[in-house]
Length: 305
Image (cartoon, rainbow, N blue to C red):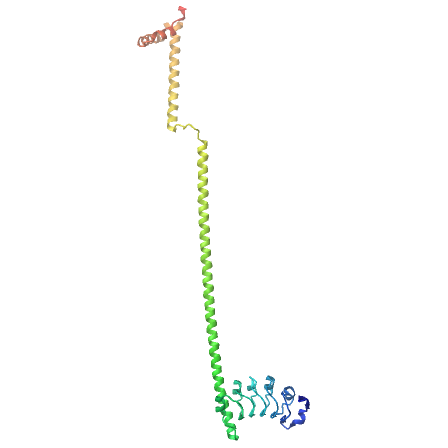
């Protein structure tokens, strides 16, 4: 049952063969669900009602072949009106339509159309022309379909161009993003290289500083180990060593000579040939020394005491 002005409508009572007459039923909305239950009703008359809009679900009634929507208050048709692909006869007389949906171009089987008494767009009104007889209404269907197909083609072209522009813009944005990422990677790589170089310089500077500090400490430690008086050089040490050895040898020889002289002067061996020679050499040496008296007294025989 469909509600309209508080009265119930039995669709079965309105069905006559394949024709369903809902005209003059004071309808404010189309009972789409109920109509979907009558797929054999290919002819639907909704004229002379109070319909201001058609729901999108109305376009699911694809079994419709003839549709009368004349003398309503329709201001527009659903955007997917073109889904009614089996529609051949369409009466839109005396409504408030200014334009038709682009999908109207999909009504490839449409052979009869009446758009009179609508506030149509001037271009569309000129294309539709009059529908005063069968021939004019058929011509109106052909011309309007052609016009709508041109509009659909232009719209498709505009959509394609828009899509192409969007794709180009997306490619451009992607290229810019990739370039930006490449620049950021290059910047990070350069910063990483600079950081590595900085750390390397710091490491080298620290290593050199440590080497200098170690060298300075070794130098200071070596200076602290040296005595305040400077040591003679090694060759001087060697020379002094030889001088001491020679001096010792000289003293030993002198001591030996004095011992021999003493023995030859104060002992009984003074008459021996060796001692005689030694005593003679002693006497000669005394004559050469200005202080021979001192030596004489030192070596004087003990008999005088």
